[in-house]
Structures are given as C-alpha cells and as structure tokens.
Image (cartoon, rainbow, N blue to C red; front, side, top):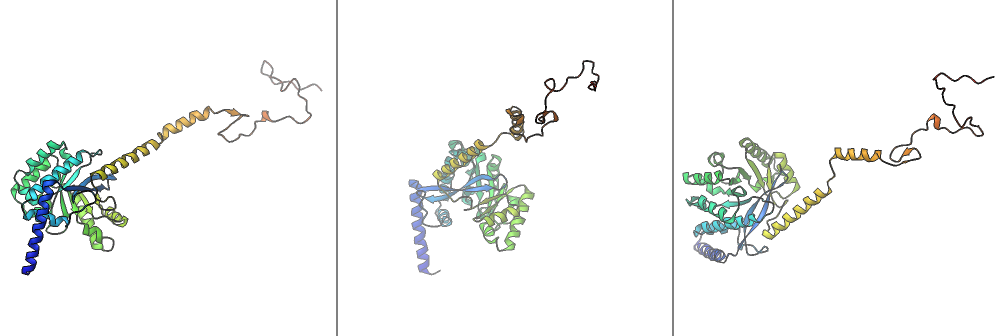
Length: 340
C-alpha cells in the first residue's frame, strides 16, 4: 500500500468514525428485520436484526461489515452492540406473534466480562423473555476460545437465550467450534445456496452439514435462499430453516407489524372458512335427509324406486269387486274358489 492509499484509508476511517459517533449520539440508526423460516413448522421461526441508517428507505453509506470494523477499530463496538440489543428487544416486545429476535455478536462484546449481566438487565428493562432472544456468534468470535468467552455463552444459554454459529463452512470455522461452544443452530453461509443449483459439491456439503446438525440435535439455517429451486434443494438436503429474499426482505418495524397483521388476518379467514368435523357433517346430513319431504311416494334426494305390484294400475275397463281386493277370512284359511 502506498502512502497515498494509506492516507486515503485513514481519512475514510475518520469520516466513518465521525458518522458512527453522530449516529450513536442522535440515535440515527434503525434496525430492519429479515425472517428466518422454519421448513418443519412452515412459519417464521425468528427475525434477524440488521443495522440500517435513518428511516426505512435509507441505507448506511458503506457496507455493514466495514461499519462494524470501524466500530471495532475505534472502540465503539461495545456501545453500538449494546444499543442494537436494546433496540431489538424493544421492537420484539411489540410483535403480536411473539417471534424471537436474533442479533449478531462481536467478539469484543463477549470479551467484556459483564456482557451476560448487561444482557439480563436489558431483558428485564424491556420485558422481553430470554427465550425470545437469540445471538449469532460471528466467525471471529470463535478465534477467541478463552474461558471467559465460553463462560459468558454458557450463562446466556442457561438463561434460555439461544445461540447459533454464523457463516458456518467459511473462514476459520471448524468442527471443533461445535464441540467448544454451546450452540443451538448453525447458519450455513449463503455461498452454498447460491452455487447449489449448478454445483453438486455445494449440494453435497449442504446435505452433509444437515446430517451433522441432525446428529447433534441442533437446527441448520441456509442463508441466501432467493429462488424456488434453492428452496427445494435446501429441503431435499434435510435443512430445517432457510433465510433469504424468497421469504422476506429486510424491513423496518412498521413493515414487520404490517406483515404480522396480514398473516393473522389470513389465518382468521382460513379458520372462518373451515367446515365442521366430517363425521358430524355426515351425521347431520343423514338426519336432515330422513326428514326430507316425500312427494308422490319418492324422496327428493333419492333415486326413484320401481312401483310395487300392488301399486300397478288396473287394466282399462276392468271393474273392481267389492271396492278392491277381498280381505282374508278371519280364521286365516285360504279363500274358496268362486262357484261355477
């Protein structure tokens, strides 16, 4: 890197640092949420919190990863991370469907010895149950296998907070992390879903990761699912959850509430349109059928029956004797033949 490049990089870092400081002071940051869909239950299992700048239609003037790198370099990552958790918990409390919220963690947050205690304090202040908060451990956090970090994670998990290993299968991730950290799920990097339609190796890796997660009794989330084909491949591989534009784009709190209202209205419409129990329906039909009006000797809902012998009309011109058929004798004996 030349001196000019180094100077330009330092200037950019300073500008972003000032931007970050301004955003934290005036609370100009907002959170957007993207659904994590359960293929097993067929519904939204959680929503991941994603940092944005300003209103719903504004974006951060740099990629999120760069912003977090600047926050780490300037020592503001702990403050930023604490605010993100607080905002996410406050928003999630207002979700009528009681869906969990998932927040990414920085290793610097975990290195703070009081991170678990601060998290419990945030839950108490916002009123969000611990079972509705999830943390995603980033790749760099797994490079710090200190006893303090592991102990912080165990405290969180014992309280009911779920943990997932983010970007599994890339970077420095290894199977040892699954042994070292008490995780409830792994999130497969989006590159596997992107390559799966035309790369059999990506499909095999997805299937192997899903089999591993199943054997460990944890969930597996495939990130970056944007097409129906990618969804079908993830389901065929045995993955339990998916996340991507196919199900939802990141949207602000108002957008989440609108989606929840629409989903609840849809479910209510389905419940209103449901028929009664089939057995009860058949029983009610039988009772009502028996009570149908009989017209001309035939039931309206039954096919016509053949006329009985005694219902056949007499031949034209024939005379009836005694007003019809002769009644049997009182003693039950056969009638005597008519006299010659």
